[in-house]
Amino acid sequence: MELGLNGKVAVVTGGGSGIGRATALRLGREGAAVVVADLSAERADAVAAQIIAAGGTALSAAGDASTIDGIDRIATSAENWRGPVTRLCLNAGIGGEGDIRTMSLEDWRKVFAINLESQFLAAQRFLDPMIAAGGGAIATTGSFGAFRSGHPSSTPAYGASKAAVTQLVRHLTARFSAAGVRANCICPGSVETGFGATAVGSGTMVTAPMRAPAGRRAQPEEIGDWMAFLLSDRARHLRGQVILVDGGRTAV
Image (tube, rainbow, N blue to C red):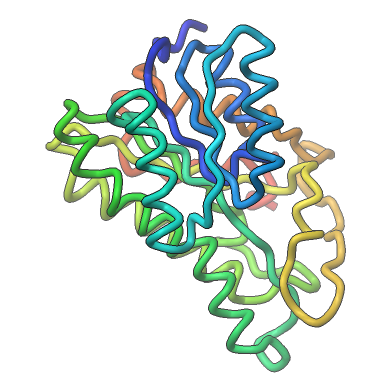
């Protein structure tokens, strides 16, 4: 399917690995000018190089998306490179382990900073230039953890932060849809990314049993395809939606 993303300037936070990497690569194949933003310059450089090697257009931008300075550095790099950003994938995220009795306040705040505040700061920084450019699209990464709390070791901070992300896209839709900005959220189930290895906390985050009707974990490329679709004009009538791409896990 031709998504009409050719020449669009797109920023992908958390673009150096997992779902972010898959999204950046798909956007590159669709002809978008992709800014691969990641805390790790090495990871961002590698993904940008892969897009370029495949004939696409990309720039790497290292920065901490959970800080004002970091997100401004990413945005400024993108704007100096290709002008206003009209496609934004907000994917930076981290897991957390431990229950409410054992998780430290520091770790609680770190999960919220990366999972939620990074999206708030990006929306705040990119909205006005996006509107001035005629509008655009924002796709955020939530989680089925916003709806289910049965994971054996995931902290409540993770689910609470992802639930807040779903409300953020509704706010963006209610306030800015008339200005030409579309915002939607993908909530994946289990994805083969090694995500649990990034969890903060004092113990080890375990792999939850697979109970989805699909019978398998998704590949990051499957979620990246959804992200690219939401950022395309093919999805122009989708606004404020929270889409569960979880293999049916929340249905059982």
